[in-house]
Image: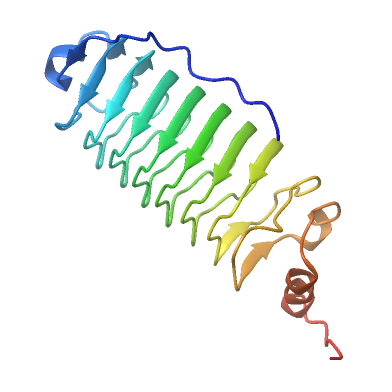
Length: 211
């Protein structure tokens, strides 16, 4: 299994609510544990560093161009949150609702997505390095034009996800579940799939399979 750097977080973070912890002038949350409540900002970039968020409501949170470092999101709701053009480094998303969340044109390194609901999430045109997706609902998610390096897909629901214009060489999809997946045929070489998945791809590309 690929080694992913863990978030560097203090063992005994002080607790606070978002209003107390968020410096609106600087757009920062640093070294704190926030449980519950609703996150807010002025719609500009933010810096979340060394923080833990438990069951925080980030729905519709707009923070393009942000930095999210050494942070853990546990049981949060990031539905339709906008973290496009952002940098995410050493982060964990665990049991997070990511429906329609936007991470497009971002850089993700040493990030884990575990048991998340990410239907319609967008990672388009992102650089994704040392990232593990494990046991997530990612149906209709978009990974169009991504650069994938050291990315692991465990048991995920990927039905109708799109990897168009994304090089899948070295990517293992054998544990993924999907009836339909959009890929670029010329970028599929080196992708590891099961026999049944290979037959499904062949039919998608218009080949007639003799049983």
